[in-house]
Length: 152
Image 1 (cartoon, rainbow, N blue to C red):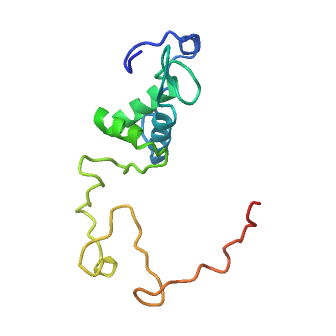
Image 2 (image 1 turned 45 degrees about the vertical axis):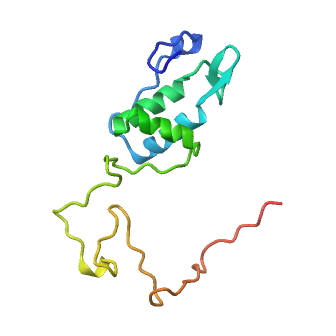
Image 3 (image 1 turned 90 degrees about the vertical axis):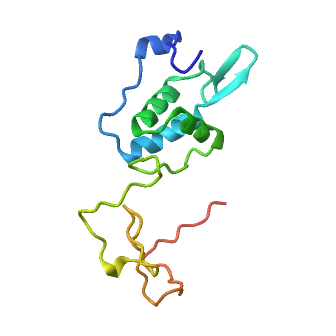
C-alpha cells in the first residue's frame, strides 16, 4: 500500500484517521518526527509492514506524522531523509522555514548586551547563556540540583 492510499485494515476502518491539530505546537512536531521514524516500513515477504506494530505500512501513526510534518512545511524528500536518518529525537526547527531556523523579527531589535563577540544576535527563540565568572570559564552546576542514584 502506498502512503496516500486508503487502508483496508479493520482497525483503520473503525477508528478512521488521527486528526491533525489545527495550531501545530513544537510538541506536535516532535511527536510527528517520532511517529514517522518509529513506525517506518520494514520489508517482509508479504510486503512492507510497520516496524513498530506489524500493521500494514503505512500505519495510522505514520500517516498522521507525515500529515503533521507536511502541514509544518516539510516536503516528501525531507520527511524521507528524517526516516533514513533513523533518530526519532532529531530536532526540526519551529517554526520551520526552508532556510532552517526562523527569521529574526525586525520589530524587536536585539540589545547590544546580548550580542556575541562578532556582533551577531543570538539564534531566535534561544536565550543567551550568560555565565558568571568571565568568558571561557566553566561554571559548576547549582548546589540545588538533585543527585539521583545511578541505576544498577
